[in-house]
Image 1 (cartoon, rainbow, N blue to C red):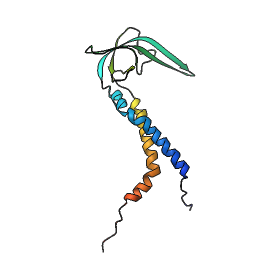
Image 2: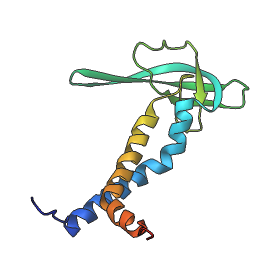
Image 3: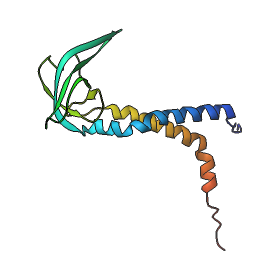
Image 4: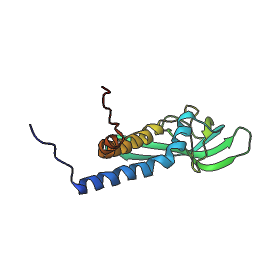
Length: 150
C-alpha cells in the first residue's frame, strides 16, 4: 500500500488563488444572475432596431439592439441589447415584452435567462477547491474526541 503524498505548498497556493479568483468573479454577480433568471425587474417592451452577428466556425452569434420602454413609462432607454435574442427571434421595429433588471445596456425576455448556471458553477467550483484543500484540516480541528464511558 502506498503512503499518501502531501501536496506541495506551491500547488496549494496556486489552487487557492484559482478558487479565490473564481469566487471574486462570481459572488458579486450572484444577485444579478438570480434577478436575470427570475426576470425580476421592471416590465416593459423592447423594440429591436439593429441586428449584430458574429460568425464563428460552425456557429453564428447574433444580438438585437434597440430601445426599452418600461410599462409605466418611467424608463425609456436606447442602445440596449435583448439577452438571448438571435437572428430569427425578432423583427426590426416590432416590439416584444422585456424586463429591465437594472443592467445599463441589457434587458431580458419575460422568461428570464440561464446565466445563473455559469455563476453558480463558478461558485461551486471555487468552494469545492477550497473544501478539497482545507476540508481535511478543518474536519480534524473540529473533530470531537469521543471516549466511551466505562
